[in-house]
Length: 126
Length: 108
Image (cartoon, rainbow over all chains, first blue to last red; front, side, top):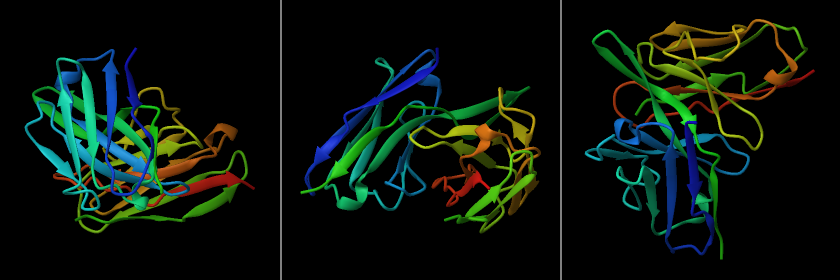
């Protein structure tokens, strides 16, 4: 079945780095843009980053720009989030999610996110 | 950047009630507005896309409406499994794909 599984979370000291992975299965990973979304404890959802299906374009939230980098290996159906210079405010559950595509006739529309991983927890603390 | 607001931030309702949540964008997003349901400890679930289209498998008691800057999520008859937090998100044009702050629906 269609599935996303995140890994790589943990406890890390401020200023250190961590790399998250998101393994996809059950669909053609290379055809889909992919997002990262995070949720701090007791808070709402925050969009973090998106990477185009072929890795040609990447966009980031201002809160992580210059510190986080997303990438993908389509041959391995895996998405990555490299997080550098981590701060306490980066503490959150991190989700990867697949863009929702609707194709009608000759038109293709990209909406939100229809498949989500279970999340991986990142805690930044000394 | 486009900002999203939601109201109310929380509400209490009885099973069987009709519930309406509103979402407003700081500028026009056409119909590129999606609604999610999230239960504690779980990943969000897509309910409505394109402002008014029901995602496959989602009960028909959920409906969405609106375009431009003002949108509404309606639950026609609240069920016990609907108690959750609901988020809107804009998927219009370029990033950031901002989420609203959420509306928590709990039992009265």
